[in-house]
Amino acid sequence: MSPALPEQPAVLALGRPRLLAGLDRAARLDRSAHLSAHGSLPQHTEAQLTALAEAVALRGRGGAGFPFARKLQAVGRAAQRRGARPAVVVNGCEGDPTSRKDAVLLARAPHLVLDGALLTAAALGAGSVVVGVTRAAAEASVREALAERGLAGGRRALSVRARVVRLPERLVSGESSALLRAADGGLPLPPGRHDRASREGLGGAPTLLSNAETFAQLALAARLGAEGYAATGAPGQPGTLLLTVSGAVPEPQIVEVPGGVPLAYVLKVCGAGPGPQGVLTGGCHGAWLDAATAARARVSHGGLADCGGVLGVGAVLALPADTCPLGETVRAAHWLAAESAGQCGPCRSGLPALAGALADVAAGAGQGALERVREAAGAVRGRGACGHPDGAARFVLSALSAFTDDLAAHVLHGGCGRPTAGVLPLPSAAGPDAPADGGGPPGPRRAERLAVDWTLCEGHGLCAGLLPQLVRIGPDGYPSLADAGVPDHLRGRAQRAVRRCPALALRLDKEGRH
Image 1 (cartoon, rainbow, N blue to C red):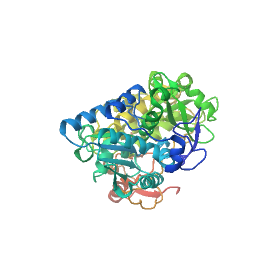
Image 2: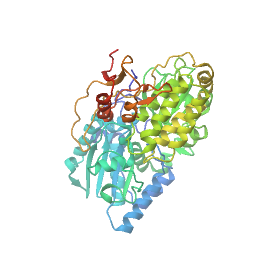
Image 3: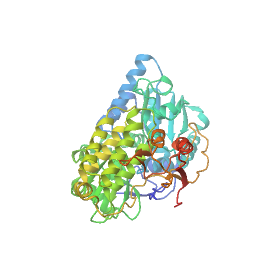
Image 4: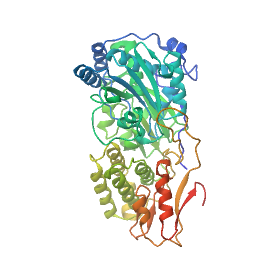
């Protein structure tokens, strides 16, 4: 069973807290406590806000790291050209299981995020603000914060209407086009086309969409000014960043760090031992670093990129020495394949093939299996309806580069001799399945896993055709099952595969049954 991260990990600030200010005294900052901790928010014109975002080098904190000032300019130009009122969307969905920073911000400091979103809306003349979430605590906190501002129930204040949209807790829910589609009443899936939100987003209007932490950082910069904001951090990464630190540490924590701080120092302060065999940076769409590289890396977009790492969603996971890194990567690769929206070939077929080939390498299938991993990764990159295939391929290929000794042991000797402990906090298969526009999700059911009765299986292969995300045909002609539970969105496919098995060999077991 994966050690799932707590919904609200403990918080820690290295240096004077900014985003986390006041959270040492209160579980949640209401409007009054928020103003006491941060002070009033000055207003900015579009030109002033753009100049401020450029001066502090503000980039998105949700994965892609796109410059915020360029988004502002693009939305402003599109709105002026079309004569349309733009929209502002806060992406707080945070579907990566290694990250909880946005969940903590929205649940405990929601007004800081709303400050940034409403400041942007006022500067652009936007008519609506939408906050996308996947977790119940975040939804409740943001709704309460909107009520404290007189914006509850979609009521209009200061010419802006604000609302909250609840999406299922899935990796794909955090994809920007999936969030926009859900906010417009559609399915929370990428639509398969690549229109920029700045041109045509929410309701067809030019839309500025960014991550929850990004808006909180903007609110801080507006209060501190460019010089005050840059009083901490590094020249290329002024200010602070939020990290979710987990893995080989006593407890997972949300840590606010100055930009450019050494990664090794962050891990030391969080209680990591001296010998992690590697560090995952940026989450399940991020990249592994070997121990030596992690020891010299610095926490910034540029500092991590120079070492082959990724800041991404701000996740940092130290891998202990007693688990098989290739096995850990196989588990995550199977989970990434199962998280596919199933709308395009590179996801529906390519990611299961990638995970299966990597599983073959871990099982000792040799050099040929390793070549299949590289071929499968190359086949999915740049060909998906969203960035999911690219992120999954980067994650898998980084493991091959970071853990060369372990890889050699598996390829040349059939294994490394260590078990796979399940350190990556992959979610249970029975997560909440929330509706796309508010309302509580049904209660979670017990997780299920596919199982095969090998005394009955005849290797027909029908199950692999019906459920490629979780089943593939192995070299012996018999099904090989992913080391992952059945997610809610694949349960119907799994039931169909069970019903259609000609030999009645496939079944769904409750998790924990042997």
